Length: 462
Image (cartoon, rainbow, N blue to C red):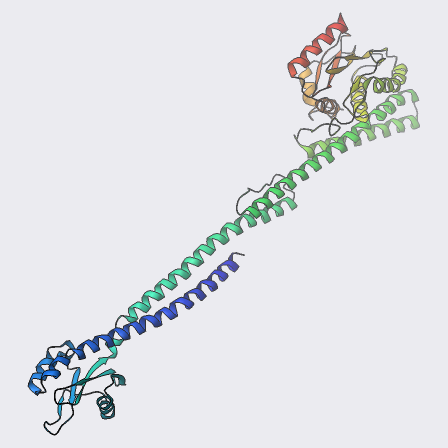
């Protein structure tokens, strides 16, 4: 594109220069010729007064010598003979005898080409009644004086215009090509997997629009890949719930090759699922989630979901001798969370109880309603968490042995999708407590949320 612009500019400028410089050069040449001939006419006219007074050779020679052309021996004079006076000839004429006779006979001035230049023939009446012819020789040097210089100036101006137009076209081409080259390079980098590449929005408006569209596309690609990886991780983590049930049920199979094979198969399946989750989260990196449900448009009854999941986990709790208590799930509690996402969050919290506490450990699920939020508390009577902050950090992908670190992350993203949050602390049962804060309005300030949590805890422990 850059060279194309330069070639077009060069061609157009060259045509303009030729169209104007050539005619202007010819005009300059013609003006120089007219100037030289006009000067010759003035030289010839200076002899006229002397011819009108006398035809004496000596007087006429003095008159001719007084002129510039005469001093340079470029003036010749011819007076035809009469009955009373002989012919007079002064100087060496350059024109032919025929041209001189014609000018004298017809009395008309003429300019004829002669060797070395031009001869101006100026007829003038004399006192003897005849017509004398004054010839002024104009050499080519006078005809072309200043023409070469003018042509050189025109050529320089034309060359300057061409060089200037090429320079301007090159700058414009660079201004257009450089952003296009950056855009092409960024597209190649994006195709090679560099999702962080972006293009500065510079250059002409069309290229700025293309750069903005490319950056928007790259952001969308990153977002889609992140959502895909999060979805893969979430779906894999949801498999942990039935796997936990299978692993706990294998304990009742007793001893024997079949039982050992079953336990080994369940353990291998758990490892494979953990590996899938970790791989998905490693690809996702530290990118924060944008909400488990992709928005808060969908909603459900949290109490109904809790009753359903408690029915599922209660059977397993009965097999392990765990005391289960639930409160507040007998009344509707509408929350702006998709049913499947809230169920996945509850399974993650309850799965942690079964996975990280000994058999026989009691646990409870409570629901607290407020004007602007619903709080779900999952507490247990286990050993508790020595470092709650570390448990939340595990929720961002630093899980230890037997943990993918995704469970609390799922719960966190469900809470944050509503404008709420997640907290981990010590429960009244003596173990760990996970508080899922689901805001009913995204405008709820954090300070208000904290106050509602404290009020809910007081009602629960009071």
